[in-house]
Length: 150
Image (tube, rainbow, N blue to C red; front, side, top):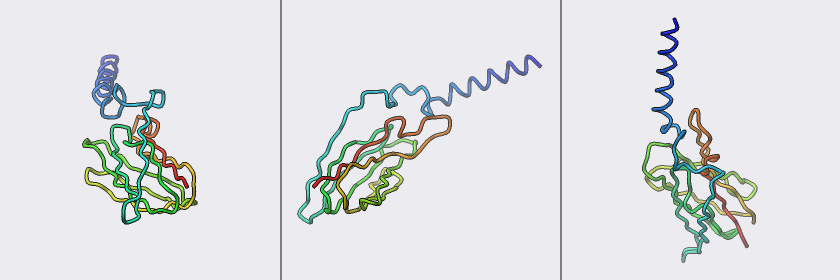
C-alpha cells in the first residue's frame, strides 16, 4: 500500500509540474498586482464623424492601453482584440449609471463595442476570466481604467 501511495503522490506531483504553466502557476512573465505596472494612457480624439475611437489589445494578463480617456456625451467605439494564444480573455465595464455596460469575449478578430458615456468619472475595466487553481485574470493585472471627462 505504501508503494501505491508513493506512486500516486509522484504522479500527482508530475501532473502539477507539467500543468503549472497552463494554469498560470509558475509563469515568470505573468504580472501580478505586486509588480510595478506601466500605465499606457490614450486620450481619445473625436473623429470627423463625431465618434471617439480607441483600439485596445488584451492578452497575457494585460490591456494595452490600460488607461483610456474619453469625453462625456460623445459616442465611443472600442475595437477590442486578443493577442494570439489559447488563454481566454474578455473585457467588461459595468457602469450602467454612466451609460456604460460592456461585457464581450476577446478574439483575434476585432470586436466593436459602442456606447455613449453620460457621466464624468473613472470606470474600471477588467478581464473576468479565471482558470481553475489560479488567480483571476484581474488579480494577475488584467485591468484598466476608462476616465470620462468634460
